[in-house]
Each structure stands twice: as structure tokens, then as C-alpha cells.
Length: 527
Image (cartoon, rainbow, N blue to C red):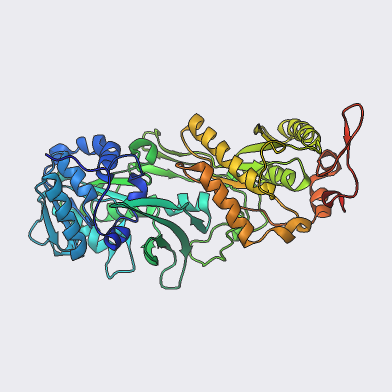
């Protein structure tokens, strides 16, 4: 049997549309084919279900998961309403020698297959799309009828509560690359959560694909939580509902597993007493003390403020979320968000560090880049950071303080030092990834109102490109900024003790004893 090739060679637009949701989770250049990566991730997970019998792959698309299931020994039926996708799936199966029944059909069309499948899967998330004419309860009810006794339903989805706890109302993925034949294409996804009177909460995914042409596609999904999905499944007769996070499956997203009972009636309420085998752990009220008006409102649209992660004047916000089973065992633990501050020792970056330490429970990294210059400013900057770090770690809470050095006397850097800092932030991200096994979630460069004149869209683009270049091939941290204040307001916020230790002067006067004092007339010294 022919093994999957390194890259898919199907036609451009077909792949760009059909693989946008799934491929970011399973394929990176140089890591083998998409099928092989998904098989490595979900193979053991599927292996435990081999005795379930024939399998159905809903919305099979170009057949990536279908091929994995066939390789694992399932007798697979794949369905999709899009002929071009089915043509690509047939080409894939023929290339690998897999025998799979591929049909141009929707789930509700399979009226002659009741009780015939031991496993039904939809990891693409298409089941939850609301921009097509489908009813979710009808789809789930149909899946229940198609399963045999003790059959398993496997669903991939995004938990709205978890996403809101970390990403807020809007998030953007880093640009990713995919290979189609010998061509490389780039795309990124923007996810927004909105609301209308008829549809209180929904998720919009905008895909921008840049290849031979730029193209935007928008897909709309119902904003579900683990709890609301479990209630739907229980109401329709499913039992044994469990949720597996990426740490357990390797798959980037939650996977819901539900069973049709060995004995019992058809789908619908009244067949048995609903009983959830798990409980969804939300932060306790004392761990989430934001005023009610400032909490995410599921039934109301919110103003999107992409640059300020706190939306409003924040209080301390918890990011940890846990899910436990009936016995109290931990099923899901969402780690704390990791935030990086590129810390110069000036008042603006010191305030950003102080706000993260006092207003969030993020794991905070403060990284200082010692820029070796003829002016000698690196020495007082480093001294300021070390003194302030000791105070904040003692009086506020511990954090990671890291340092690196760039010799600008021997290595000419871009005229804007923020680009060098952004590149160094990517190096910090790589080091963190190698140590922890996951990337930093977000990072910031601080600025005051007095410094905003040279900070525009072009400069921001250059800065983000520098970061992305040094992060490759790992996940690029999201860039965020706090609301910008004037220097006098920042100093008032920090207090005289901390602000008095900050150092911003670009042309320090170095004394004979090695100490430094501010020049008093450079741009940074001006009041």
C-alpha cells in the first residue's frame, strides 16, 4: 500500500477552502503529510474504538480524517454535500489504496443506515455551522439513530467560555503556511464573537488566504460551551459524555465523546433520567470579582477592542478553568496565560509590567535587552530593571526576569530599537517553548503619549514581522497594548518609589566612579 506523500498535490482553491479549519491543527511544513500527523495525534484515541464496527465521517471534505480511519482498520463511509471535495477525497483514497464508501449526502439523508455505525465523527466543526440551513438538534438526533448500541459520537469543537476567558471578544491567529504541490500559500484566521436578537451568541471565522490571489471567506458557528453541548446530547439520549482537551489527545481543540446506550429507546427526552458524568468548573465568584456589568455578556453584543485585553478598567481576573468528572478527578485544566513584557526600565514598560502583576494572574515574563552602545545607557537601564524587579517580586508577586544582550557597536541594528526588541521577543518565545513545551500567549511593547508620534500602522507591521520571523516555526504570541497614558500620569500610577528608579535617558552622563546621571535634555528626559 502506498504511504502518504509529504505534501498534498490537490488543486488550489479546493484545498484552501476545504482544509482551513483542520489543517492548522494537524500539518506543518516538514512534519510529513496531513494524514500522518493526524494519525500520530488521534491514532491511539481511535484504536480504542476499533471494535465499534463501521465508521461514518461527517463532512469528510478532502478525506484527511477518512484516510486516517481507513488506515486504522475501520470500514469507513464518508459523506459531504460538496462534489469537488468528494472528488478530492476519492483521489486521495485511490492514491493510498484505501477502500472507502464516499457519498454525496448530508447526515439527515442517511435514512437507510439506522443502527449501522459504531463510530460517527466530525472533527471539522461543520456540524455547528449556522450559516447553512441546518438544525443542530436534528443533526444530533439523526446521528443518534445511525449509531448502533454502545456506538460512539466523536465531535471536535471550540468551547465559548474557555475561548472568552483567554481571547476576549476577538482574536487573530498568526499567519500560517500550507503547501499545495510546489506552491506555498499563507493564511490567517480572525475569530469574533457577536450577537443579534435572533442569535444571541455566534462565532465568526474570517479566513484570509494569500496565494495566487487574496480571498476572504467567512463562516459562522453556534457559540457552544461544554455544558450546553452536554445538555443537548443528554436530552437526545446520549450517555457517557466526556470532553478531552489537547493535552490528552494532542488535537488543538476540545473533543467531545458521547455514546448511545447499550439498551434504551430512540433519541428524545424521556428515555432515561439525564445524568451528567462530569461538572464544568468555572471560577468561583471571589476569583472573578469583576462587576457584573463588566463581565462577558453572552446575550449582548460587545464593542470589539482588540488592543486592550481588559476591555474596561480591570480588576484582577482569573484565567484558570478546570473540568472534573463525577468522582472529582481532573479532566481538563487550562493553564495560566503567559504574558511577556519587553522591559527597558523606563516608566512606560515598568507600568505595563506592574499592571500585569496587579491586574491579572498571568504568568509574567519581563525581558530586558541590554543594548550595548557608545553612550553607555545599557548600564543604568539594567541597574534600574534589577532594582525594580527585586521590589516588585517582593511587594507584588513573583515573576520571571530574563536578560539578553545586543552589541549595537559591532552589529548595526535597525534605527528603530523596537524592531530589535520584537526579534528578541521571538527568541524568548523559542526558549520558553523549548523549556515548557508551549509558546508564550501574548507580548507587549509599552509607550507613552509623548512617544506615540512615531508609532503608526507601518511601524507596527514591521515590528510584528520581526517577531514572526524569529518565532518560526512555532506559534507567534499575540501582540497587545494597554491604554496609552502621558508620562506624568504613568509616574502617578507607579508612585514615586518605583518611578524614581526608572531610567529613560538616551545620553547618560557617566561619572568617574561608573555611576550615571540623566543628561536632562534628550528626548526621553523632556518632561
